[in-house]
Length: 266
Image 1 (cartoon, helix red, strand yellow):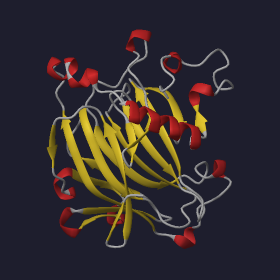
Image 2 (tube, rainbow, N blue to C red; image 1 turned 90 degrees about the vertical axis):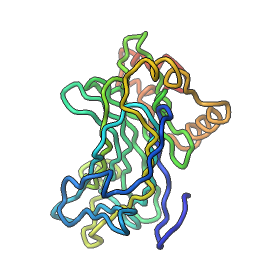
Image 3 (spheres, one colour; image 1 turned 180 degrees about the horizontal axis):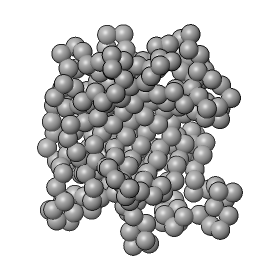
């Protein structure tokens, strides 16, 4: 999956909203390291960034800019080998008690076992639910350009939608061995530390405008094509292990209204 350079094998992640003007990437120019001291590094002239986790601390970074509409690409190399207990989070978020947030969370696992990908959407401070492995019209989640989740605009049904609050990009690598791997049964093996994740090829085709130009044109018409819908169904059929829209134990009085909006609305 992905491509290889300097011995690193990367795969691509995308938050997609609506296309505007693309910008080339340089981590020095586009991001700030926010915590972790020496555990977070930018190198190769700003073309690579790494986050590390040891028993003392993890690390993280955030974008200098905020984004509202656009397509945001990043290639990641997750922690190799035994990554049990670790979480690599990559997400968009605004600030405040009524914040919006769109997440990728990669839950580490024992050597040879696959990562589990968590996706979450928060709108106006409220979680609309989590889907484990698998797009949010117009905010799709893609992995290697394959759609894995679709969350449509259901404002007409009273479901808030993340379209008004510009968000920054955040990423962090941290220890969560109380829950991340097999419900906390498998703990972090600190003899394997430091654990390191790598980032490259950030691209943003974005706007922070809330004008009607965006609201009334591409923003409203961005949809998955027939091929994209088939790929989404394939992911859901073959890889999805949890979907909050089918969790009747969690919602004994009935699933949230967005779950009834579309069979692709997950």
